[in-house]
Amino acid sequence: SLAKYQWLDLIIMIPFMTPPYIGSMGWMLTMQRNGLLDQLSPIFSHITPYFFSFFGMVLIMSCHLTPFLYVILKNA
Image (cartoon, rainbow, N blue to C red; front, side):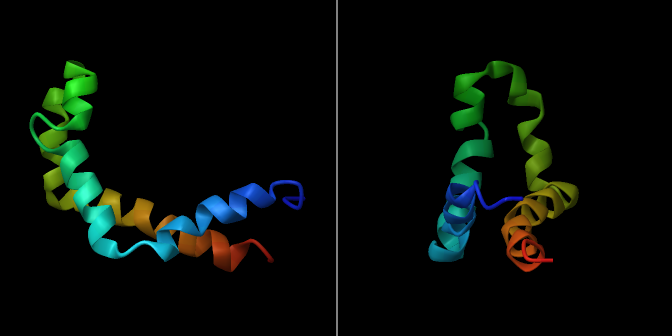
């Protein structure tokens, strides 16, 4: 019953329309030391280095692949 949420389909398609380097630059600028997340809330300053570890990259890639799963599974 996602027919009434057609705007969600449009938002989910945005990662398909943007090049991958735009997404990676966004994550880097947000999560780096003194990045956007660190400037908005200094509480996260001890968390941001973990995004540049192996497990952080797995988390980021999982977030990046979620729209692909949505497109595949929305008609199931």
